[in-house]
Amino acid sequence: MRHARQGRKLNISAQHRKAMLGNMVCSLIEHGRIKTTVSKAKEVKPLAEKMVTLGKRGDLAARRQALARLRSKDSVHLLFTEVAPKFEDRQGGYTRILKLGLRSGDAAEMVYLEFVE
Image 1 (cartoon, rainbow, N blue to C red):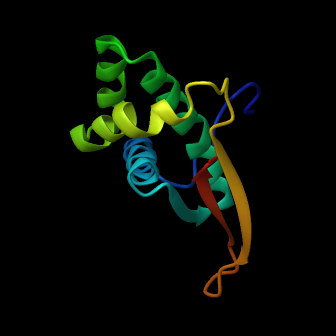
Image 2: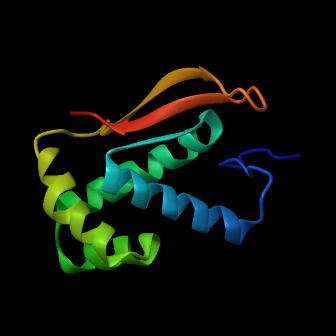
């Protein structure tokens, strides 16, 4: 039984899931909005919010923690210089999920995951 287990498996291996979620957060930071499925968006949202919180801290340790998770120097630079300063006065809730409808191929529910402006 999966009592008190957090997170979704998404039917992929742990390494693939970790890489995919990191790449999705990088894309969100670079583009400001990504289109994905509901379950993936619900997994990416807490990770993206944690990265913004690290960006708001702004110290070297926070930068290294973000780089360890995202593995993209460009994304980390964008996070600390452009994204995080926008949310200086906000205590949380940096992202939102907007439902779009069903995907035509497999009827998966699609959403936009974006930063709140």
